[in-house]
Amino acid sequence: MHRVTIYWKIQDYRVHAIQVCDGLPMRISLNGEQYLDATDEQYQRLLQYQREGMLEFRHKELTIINGELQPVSNLRLSNSPN
Image 1 (cartoon, rainbow, N blue to C red):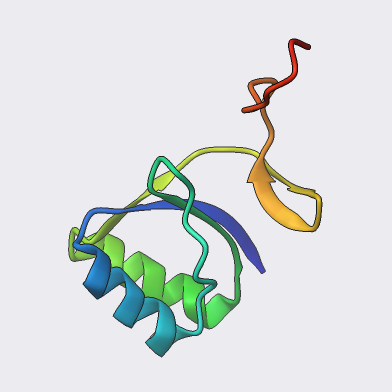
Image 2 (tube, helix red, strand yellow):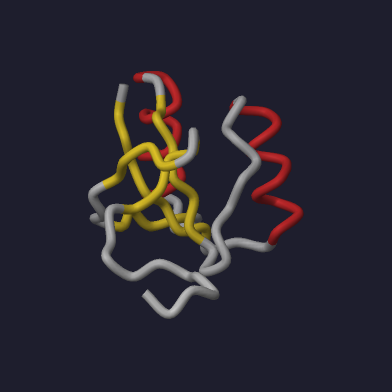
């Protein structure tokens, strides 16, 4: 498995088609990033998409928060003052 953060540089409808065809999770963050645990085969496809200029890899440490893959950060969106 390859834990990666990617940013899609193509239109939404194309991202959706790729996600369906490649079996990638559908969830994308508010800033347009997608966090995923990619299989070796999926990772090779992502590398190909990168070579084609369709996405870029972002270097973020990821962890599981509330059952979802999220970046490790001390900046959290919240309504609480803490």
